[in-house]
Length: 321
Image (cartoon, rainbow, N blue to C red):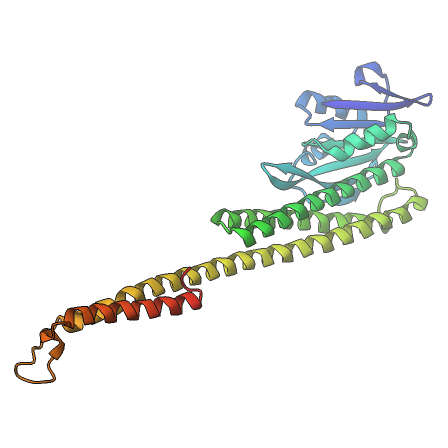
């Protein structure tokens, strides 16, 4: 889909290639173009079609490129798919006297906000490619802040759930969050290199007086990287909390089983001793209780008393509730 915006006598006008005879537009936004749209784009912009096809792929690394007829900035923008943070690539071509082309395969919220700013009267974004590029990269960077704030809320909630009632599904959530953190880290470090290269003046179509402003984006990216590393440490801690909680719960279970088993073991031991039936007919030491008229009740009493004492002991140690 092609979307074309032009500053026409102080007003923003959205037009199409069919309505213009020459390339006098300011911004062309190209979202998931088909072959027909690509061919039309090449015809009007004179940009090489192979370049356009290459920069439609999302697996490229963010970078800058200076060519004779255009300057290119490839930047990573965050998106969410299937509850997982992904990154997509937006390619920004600065070409001609004052023209901008954005090329992307996924919907990018930052582009929508830039368009909104333009339609609200910020026409300088169309008149000066340097202003447009800064505004777009700044908006994309802000998306990372929003994303990490949301991630922080999810991680805090997960930690609370783990402490209260750990479940096996929590490990899957932790690993998914850690995967998100890795994706964000790779995207941010690559974007940081892009800003560094812009600051070094590699792109001729960015005004020298505008380069200093990119230090603000650089500082934001450094802050984002620090935040992201903090969340990675927090997730590692959450996993350790989960494993510790599970281990403690297992210890409590083993204690209870041991306690109840001991309560059964003592009567069983006493019963097995008296079950040997060593009568005292041959020796006075061979269980005289067997012929005592109260021997049976004596054995039951010993069983009951020992069981009660053991129960009270385990209850005091909080092994039995």
